[in-house]
Length: 79
Image (cartoon, rainbow, N blue to C red):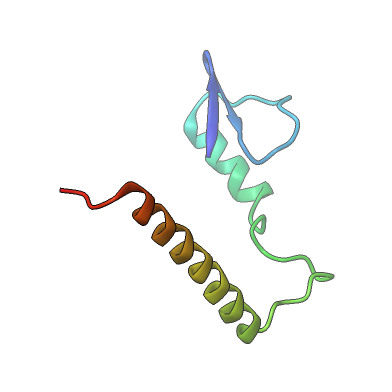
């Protein structure tokens, strides 16, 4: 949410750290007004279909399980 430098609070989302805030309420006011939609997708980015997301999730899970299984056989049985 923020970083603190001695007595000033700075916004962690803003690229430039020019303006510091004296207290947490000032920083919260800034974030509410300036960054209300920072986590929404821009209009030129298309959403990914659910089938693609599920395929990607399955591929990641399969790769993790394979690596964990290989590590388990190399380490041996744990007591």
